[in-house]
Image (cartoon, rainbow, N blue to C red; front, side, top):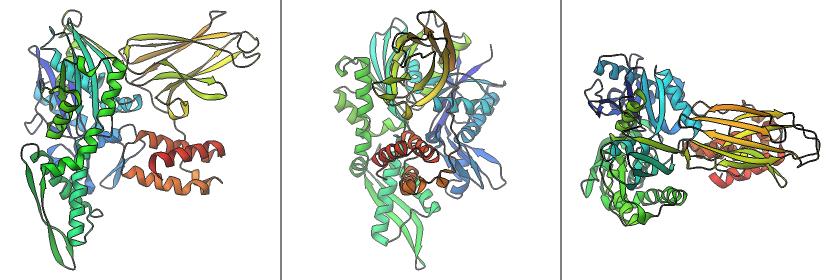
Length: 556
């Protein structure tokens, strides 16, 4: 079979690996390195550059350079690079194309197949756009694998004789995932996953930047936040400061000629202690507790039952993170895998299972879970917007679940079955991933005819939804590729033309401004879209409800 590589497409860095000689091997890029910065730029000649070359021009040409685009995957937002706007999928495909080229060169063969990792808490839209990016780069994407699961595979390959509960704590550059697995007799069974797609090392950097620019303004009365060149230098030095403070107690930030005022140049010269840095990020580290609690609750495994806590992701090198984990669990975490490489190595192991290099039936078996709840729209009392759950989140897949429903009105002869994914009890805030109509229901009084809805979800990301009229046996079904779903949105750009627009213009403007500081917040992105849609359709009651919820989440 064709060689399949594993790729860890990270927020800050990207790595690739291949399974050779019964172990995963990291691939070297054109710079001879295993790690590629996830940075894309346009050089002076108008050519696309990726990795270290792009990162090197960040300070000189921030307007022609894009970084950390992974946080925008699945969000209706573009980035500007040079004089053009690009979607996150386009930027991601440039990184993956670079990986494909250097992998082909390193292995001396055309590499066109890959397993690509994503955060466990990515929803199907984010997964689908990652697949799109891979395809645009020329890959056949054989599988999307959750990052903590990949890291556990990397660990488990050498420890298949163990019987233990393992919690994978994955804090990377832009996302946080936590996954609990059970290992027994060559089986890796995922029990539960949760996470925060807006939490990572980038946020640590941002806190340092805010502190440093605040100190600079207090000293010299100069606001640096409107100067992209100055901010690029502060960002670069903040990253160095964060890394240094993982091994030393203080770091001196020195940036010469950072700004001028009345023709007088001013430099940044600030000593940052580890204690100060930890004070700045304490609430961010504490935010990891809620997803951990979700995983423990959903899995039914207590903290005391955990045998190992594996650290993955570069941000777990921050001493406060490790101390916090140990204090929270009462157990010292382990660095049994390389935090930077484990995900790429695990993806390569999954690739080897697919290609047959590893015999899954005799060497290793892996199960996973669906990270989000699946259900249909149903009438519940007076609420016709109710999310009726069929497969709850963190259910081991493959799985099949069935639920009975009854006709809602007299002489009802058909039913529209709308399939949703998400955690809200109202389907309007969830993601519609498919629908179909079941016709031929015998004409009877309300509640006299039963419809059985069945969901079958397999490990290849396929969801089969079947609706059956119980009395006749007639059924209709659809197959939904959960790795190839895309939300169908209408164009709401003309919302200002509606008579309702004036009532919500301020709320929308403030929410959009809030979004600039919270890139990738999918709930608020969805609320903004739904509010504009309601305004365009002049649905006053829904617009009022959505406007109130938008203000609640953003303070707009």
